[in-house]
Amino acid sequence: MPETIKASARQSGQAQSGQAPVTEGTPHPVQLGLTAFTLLAGIISFVAGLIVRQHLAATVLGLASMVVGLCVQMISATRAQRIFLMAGVVPAFVGVCLGLAHGGFS
Image 1 (tube, rainbow, N blue to C red):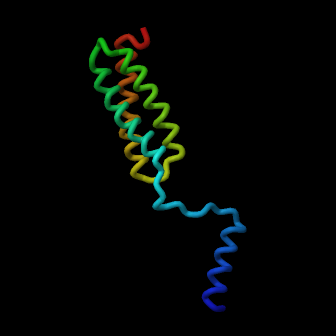
Image 2: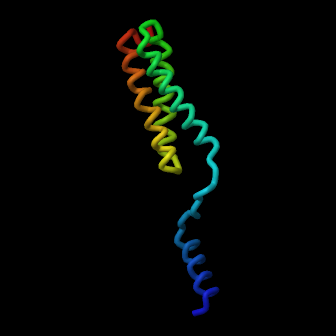
Image 3: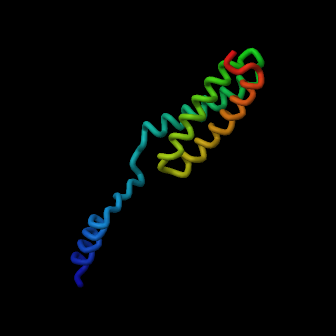
């Protein structure tokens, strides 16, 4: 079989099988922005959780960071994104716990 026939047969087989095209190398600006928010908000929540008077800020910001981070985790495209997401979700969780321990939403 000539090369052109082999290549077209592979391509048509991929299209017929319903596989999605490979999207490596394409930018994901919304996901990257949400990843940056998760990381920064998680770190700020952790630091605010260490300050007793900032319990409301730590709780709210940490909860928002956890929700956004875990949602973006499900649609993340790269391994680096997942690493940064978890690097933001973990301190956000600690910030929420510290904020709740210091008074929570009250």
